[in-house]
Length: 173
Image (cartoon, rainbow, N blue to C red):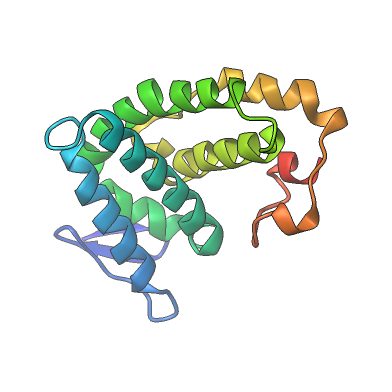
């Protein structure tokens, strides 16, 4: 039996205290398992959509639940190290550069600031959930975009996601 900050783990099965919601773990598990198909059965445009959906969901799950249950997330993700390593390669090489390209070519009708905030938040959520397993995603282009424009950022309160932590300064610039 291994102990991790007061939570027990027996033979690969996480023991979740009753005050925590296993529904979020089930969603995270399903996402990780579906991402195993990236580059095999899912390619091209379908892969881009799958990666964007994955990252948007990671951001939502993190805001909705895992930012307040960090230890639970870290214990759970240890069982998926191989899957997360594969996902990391796709996200780090393809998602980040593709999102930066889209940001540079965004239509004037869409707020580039809000889009950049969403990308940055998704990257930070990925790092929060999986960084202890595979390292952190790098996003120098997106970070630079935000830094260069933070003085002129214009965002409505209604565009800030519910539960966005104050550490995500870009939403509150």
